[in-house]
Structures are given as C-alpha cells and as structure tokens.
Length: 289
Image (cartoon, rainbow, N blue to C red):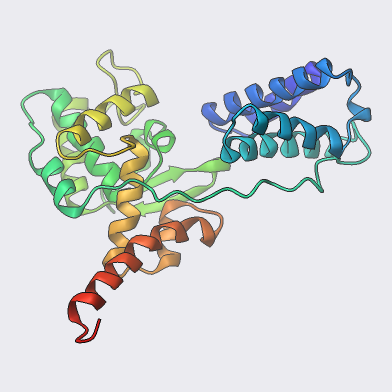
C-alpha cells in the first residue's frame, strides 16, 4: 500500500498542490496504512467502509479533534478516488463514509483600530522593515493565504494596473486588486529594498524565497504589539480582511471570490461579526431594545 500512497503523492505534486497539503496528506495516509497493517489489512482491495470508520473512531478515542479527523478522512477519500479512477480498485469504500460534524469556531481577527496601529507605526529604518511593512499591507489588502503570499513572484504583481495574480488551492488562479496603501508599500519595497530582478516577490535575508515559517514570525511579532489573540498567524490577517470588508457592507459573494473559497458556506463564517455589530447597533438605537 505504501507504493500506492507514493504514486498518489506524486500525482499531487504533478498537479502542483501546495507543499503543506502534500505533506499533510502523506502523513495522514501513512497513519491510515499503519492502522490497517496493525489490524491485518494489507491488501488494498479488501478495505471497506467499516475499516475507515473504525480508523476514525480510534482517532476520536485518542482525543483527536473532529476537525483533524475530518481532514484525515478527506485525504483518504481523495486517495481512494485516485485508485478508482486509475482502475486499481473497482469500488470506492470511502464514498458512503460521512465526515464528522465539526463546530465552526469564530476566527480571531484584529479590530480596525488595532490594524491601523499595526500598519501606521511600522518602523521603516531598515530594508527588512520595508519588506515587512509590504508583507503586512499585502496580507491585509488582499486576504491571501500564507502559502499564496510566499509563492508570489515579482511577475505576478502588475504595477501598472495595481493587480495581483494569485494561485490558490489546486493552483486555481484569481486576480485581486491591490489597495493604495499596499501598492505604495510594495512599490517602496521593490524599488528600495528588493530590486527588480526576477524571482520570488518576498525574499529572506539570504535572498531566497521567504518561507511560511519566516512569514509566521513576522506576522506574530507585528500582532503582539497591538493585540492579544488566541491565534496570531498570517491567517489572522485573512480573517481580519474578510471581517472588515463585510462589516463595511461588502457583498458576501465578492468576498468569497477574493478569498478563493469554493463554497459560499466557507465564507459565511465571517458574517458572525456583521451580525454582532448589527445587534449592537440595534440595542443602541432602538427605543425599546
């Protein structure tokens, strides 16, 4: 079965899935494979839905979150679909296995005042300061994922039209407008700190493409200065971007398009903030609230 997993992972790489997704799926499938071998299920053709469900049950009994189990099941479903399409198996045992229902947690985000303080008071004394300012402005202006930002090339930023070309999950392309403040920060970074040579848009100290770990440190350091949140990561900036747009009346489908969400229901998690704001306004303004 390990050879089949390797073939599947090679397929993901060919389809240009992100490094993070490839690593996660590989780990999840190897864990599933170990479970099957432990229970005497070495033949791929002999695996049925009960095996998959019992694997999920064991994970839950070990204290795994439902969201983690759901992610592992997603990897398993995708793997068996690959096997079925390539006629390695006749039927897909994962089709009828239901994904565990997970509670949607309210995303951590910064207030407009906190965001303003973070961006307005970023020091610009060194080249790295200029780069970090451009990174923060870009994240807030576009709502792109960490993986999307570190994979940006200089050629993907159209300075003339002020547009950013981004490749999201499954390498799906989307075009995102760059706000004035972000455009100015990016232009300053390119002209004064980076240079116009080809390659990655955001570079590390050594001149190599910035890593997601580098990005994590930069964002966390900036957030700590203005707020205390349960989560402090590049994704916090994405949550903030979406929340602020909806709070100011942006169309939900437009936000969905900007974020690159396949489903509108994924974007709807951000409407909680708008609803809470609506409740506050109602209580403040209604005579009998």
